[in-house]
Image 1 (cartoon, helix red, strand yellow):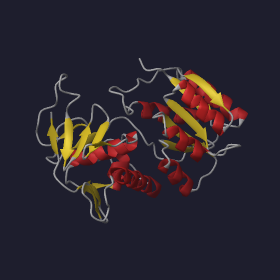
Image 2: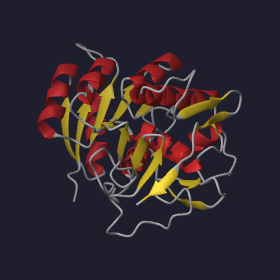
Image 3: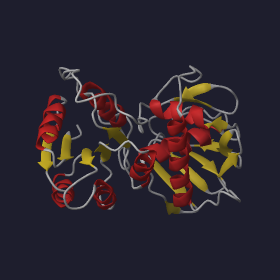
Image 4: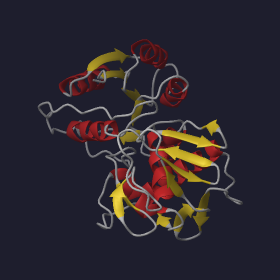
Amino acid sequence: MDRRVAVVVEDDEDIRELMVALLGQSGFTVHEAGTGTAGVAAVRENEPVVVTVDLGLPDIDGFEVTRQVRQFSDAYVVMLTARTEEIDTLLGLEVGADDYVTKPFRPRELRARIEAMMRRPRVGRTTPVTPASPTAPSDATAGGPAGSLVADAPAPTVHDPSGRTGAAAGSVTGAPMPTAASAAEFRLESEGLELYPNLHQVVADGREVPLTPTEFVLLETLMHSGQVVRSKAELARTLRGDEAGDGTFVSGADERTVEVHLGNLRRKLADDAKEPRWVQTVRGVGYRMAGGVRGIR
């Protein structure tokens, strides 16, 4: 089983103790740090699967902590802050955070966000971490509701171009679902871009491209959709784990978050938005793959 280890980087002692208790109740072994530098060292030493980072730290800020952590760790990073400006949310996502939660927050909601993220495999994992089922922490608010899109939610159900509905590792072009023996080799392919759903791996022209789970599920969803256009609202719902077509509300900030993640994805793929080879913007509608996609096993 995967080690349930977490690191809390927070200079406010009361909030740090709350986070330690919250994660401890969720079955984590928790290490804590009161500064950004100590937090980076704790992540390096303990190899956690979850890191919570306060944005306002006494030495280096949470953005810099996340940048440094992303150089050697694929842990789920949740940024906590009292700032409510959208630009801070976007900057947090751009430097590699998986989610951004504003203070004050509800402990129960934060725990639900973390467990939802852990259902999606990280780079190098072939199976997701199984969340524990501890006694739920008090729903007393450590303030009010959190204010960001859940960046990594349970694996969504997506539609392929033919209109069938299936799990994210299904076939695009009618090929059968891969057997256990061939699951690792099953891939989606489009014009030199290869995505291996069961390995959480993307290869572009022979070059492996490291993606965050959010970037990965966006690309996977688009490749399963082929040249069927997916709106920003649909993609936002996919990231939240909502059922397709349920019409749940999607805010402008949620759609902007999708834009940021797709911008990061394109940059990593070296895909020109003006002359796209892979991910194409359909102005005023959404996104689709520029070319055909096939499933191979």
